[in-house]
Length: 382
Image (cartoon, rainbow, N blue to C red; front, side, top):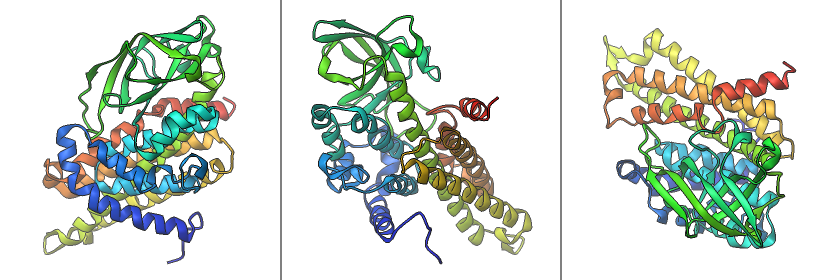
C-alpha cells in the first residue's frame, strides 16, 4: 500500500511506538479509569518521560522538534484505547492549554509552565467557559483588576477538563469592562493560589476517564508576570488557540470513528445470521462501505487542512469544516457501529457503546456544530 503523502517514515515510526504504548499502558486500564472518573497522573508523567507530550514542540522547551502531524498521530492513536476521555485530557495538555504559552509567552512563562507541562510534571487546564458564557467568548465575565504589580481575579468557570487536579489554568478574563472583545486578557493561574477553589467535580454522560470541574476564583492574586500575551488582546490570542483546538478535535473524532468502524467490521466478519456472516448481507456490507467512505473523506479534509495550518496559515473556514464534518461523521459512524452489533452493542461491557457516548461531545466542545456553520457562512461572505 502506498504511503500517505502527509506522513514520513519518521511519522510512521512514532505511530508504531505510540500504538504499542496505548495497547500496553492505556487500553488495559481504561475500564478502571472510566469507573473512577479519572486517569492516574502517573500516565501523563509517563507520556512526558517518553517525549509524547512534546512531539511537535522545539527542543529548546523540552520538545522533540517534530511537526504538527505528530500531534495528529497522537490524537488518532490514543483513540484506539476505546474511550474519548483520556485522549481529551491529553489533547488539553498538548494542544489547548500550552500552545498559547509557546506562541505568546515569555521565556519565564515557558520555564515555569510550558516545560513542566511537556514533561508531564504539571497538569494544565484551559479556562474559557462560564456558567452563562461559552461560545460567546467576547462576553466573558470573569474579572481581573490591576492592583500595583498584581492582578486580582474574581469569577466562575465550568466544564473545565483537567480542572479538578490541574496545576495551572490558562484563564480567559475581562480586564476592561464594557469593551467587548477588546477587553479580554489571558492569565496563567496556579491553582494553589489563595482564593482558587474547585467547587465540584462534574458527572458526565461520556468522556468519563477525564475529570471535569467547576472553578471559583475569589480575589485570586497573580503577578503581572503571569499575564500571557498582550493586555486587551486575549480575544485574538484565544481565537488563535481555538483553531488548533478544533483541528485536533477533528483528528480525535476521525480516530474514534475509525476505531468504531474497525470494531464493527471485525464483528461483521465473524457474527453469523441466516447461514452467513452478517457483513455478507448487502444491507450491512453497503453500510460498512458508506462508513469507510465518510471516515476517509473526513480524514483527508482534516489532513489537508492540517497541512496548511502546519505551515503558518489559519484557514478558519476549512478548520471549521473539518471539525464539523469529522464530529458529525464520528457520531454517525458510532451509531451505525452500535446498530451492527445489535443488542450486544448496547451492553456496558461493549466498547462500542462507550465510543457512541463519548463522540457526542465532539459536536459541542471547542465550538458547537452551529458555531462552526456560522463561521463557515461568514467566511463565505454571508
